[in-house]
Image 1 (spheres, rainbow, N blue to C red):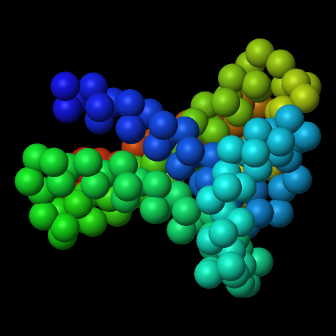
Image 2: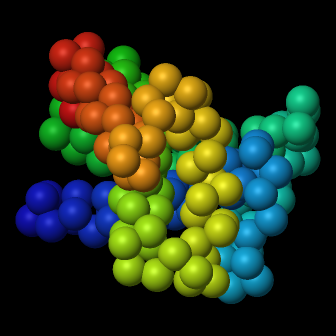
Length: 175
């Protein structure tokens, strides 16, 4: 029964945390989302971000309330481990590891979406938005890995590097 409860909590937390991280990333790199994405993102996360902004205002051009909100969501979802007797330190360390894992998986998902758009429909309405979200990750890689025969391998290299980061994270924090 605990595993079913954990599945439900993790699913809800992952969706909400992903939206909060997307909101932070969009504002950090100053990407204006399409109306449908903006409406979904802000509708789903305003209830948490707006009150947090009273405590943690944005500074340096970053929406810290969204980032802290995402961490609070992962911390709350991880606190279910108190039921099985985990200590506060264990829960906090695991929550921090899961938070970083969510960030890495979010970047991997964005990169895969960009690759699919480039193969299926590069002129899709969301393609420029996804490309703009990925550009800060891919720009440094493109300086090192030039296109080979007209094929841009930077997405593949970025996913590989993110997978290595996940592997290293697993060696530090068992997630």
